[in-house]
Image (cartoon, rainbow, N blue to C red; front, side, top):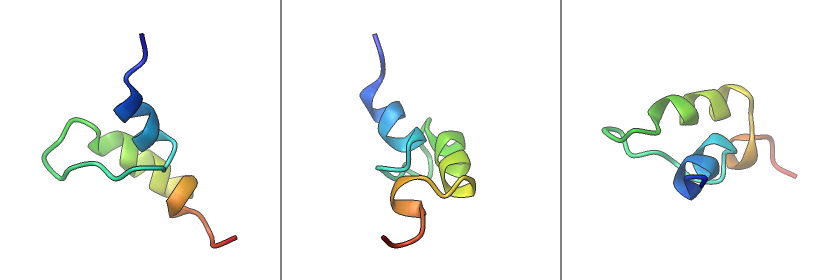
Length: 41
């Protein structure tokens, strides 16, 4: 089974809580400019 929260954060469609477990996934998504962290369309 896949963690939906992890998928959303990793693909840039959600932000991680500062003290949460998805911080690294958000960092990677931001660096790759994925989802909402990408340029405006």
